[in-house]
Amino acid sequence: MEDSRGAVSLTDRVTTLQAARDVLSGLAEVLWQAQGAELAGVLTLLDEVAGLAGAGRVAVTREAFTRGEVAASQAGSLTGWVAEHAPGLAVAGGGGQVAAVVEAGLRRATRPVTDAACSGRVPVPVAVAVIREAERLKPQLQPEAVPTVVEAMLTMGAGHGVRAVRELRARLIADYGWPGQLQADQDAAAALVSLSAPVGDELGAFSYRLVLDAEGKAVLEAAIGPLSKPAPDADGAPDRRPARQRRGQALIEVCRRATAAGARPPVGVKTTLVVTMGLAELTERLSAGVAVGSSESGTVIAPETVRRLACDAQVIPVVLGGPSEVLDWGRTARLFTPGQVKALWLRDQSCTFPGCGIPAHWCDAHHVTHWVDGGRSDLSNAALLCGRHHTVVHRDRLTAAVTAAGVAWDTAHGSYDRALNATAQPRGRPPDLGLARGPTEPAA
Ligand SMILES: [Zn+2]
Ligand SMILES: [Zn+2]
Image (cartoon, rainbow, N blue to C red; front, side, top):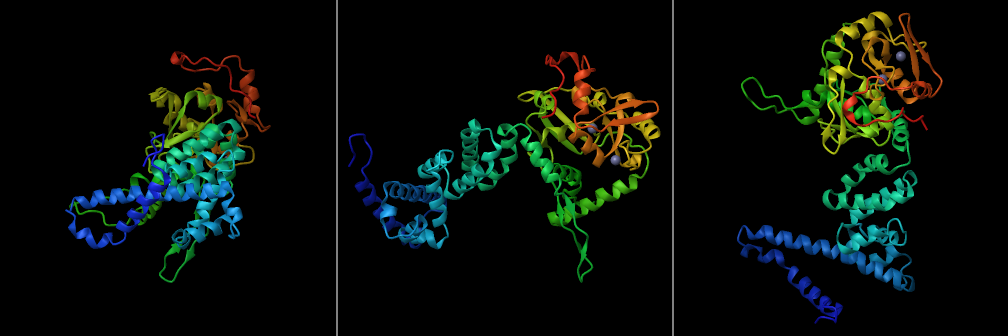
């Protein structure tokens, strides 16, 4: 029976549900009757029924909760009420989750999540993940962006599940967070980077515990990626090493090659990591870069970090002018040539940061005026920096004076931006970009 708006009445639905319950019990005993191909269709149908039944549990609970039925009952809590009336859910440990999703409907930011769970758009575990992420991210987001962020997480969760929701975090902070939030988060994570001392066991094997930040993870994965692919034998026999063994052996190989490279100037460019980022985002230090082309594709990297990576021959930043439009600035224009690096090694001898003596072969060639700000790949714009001080120089935005006598750093925070603002025209920016803009804004 249908009501005046054409909807099936609750009474009729309950009757049909009771019939469905009756035919579902004992289903296993008649499955032998199915043609082989029919089994897949039956499974899909059951999946749809189970998904909608799960959504129905949330909807009924919400109705009882908002009407005061739960408060009027003898159940001490919403979770208790769910456990009493949905014992199967309680046994599976999902009662608390349904209660959490219903209670989130009381809060404005997370009400769309409860709506999505009630309609069956997302399953309850995904709704719980979206609620947790939304509450965790909220203080880091600009308030007007919260509905957009919640909607993005629902869309991702509906298509790809709980893990995809969590993996959106950095991207969402980059796009909708307070200015500098992603950089602050990633700088904080950088302080957690660690590698334990080896712990030996009785078999002669050693364990390490390694903690990396997003940049470190992207660099490591890019470095070991090609070396950790399965490598068939000469006679074509497949590589039977498990993935974790291939990864461990690739890491040893990377270290071995780094050691073997010794104190010789590098020849040519080794590509290990590709980072994409919009040109406007890069020059204005907004948003974030995204690593591509390694197993860590999609790792979001904060903007100041991308600018530092752009100095380094090991990394190719692909700068995007607009959706899918790659502005090819050319690697030769961006990077110091091996000949220049050799001259730089002779001139600087070691890391140029005050008080540091890390030898030249462990250093990056830094562009004193950043490449993205129009800095040229000239020796007069170059300074050797060890990895640690390269990070410091970009993080604290420091500039230096380069003379034939060497490099003198101005270690006052923000000296880079003051020097850049004092320059009338950024030098060396390709004229055909059609993206005229003034010097970079001072650091916040
Ligand atoms: Zn640099
Ligand atoms: Zn140094």
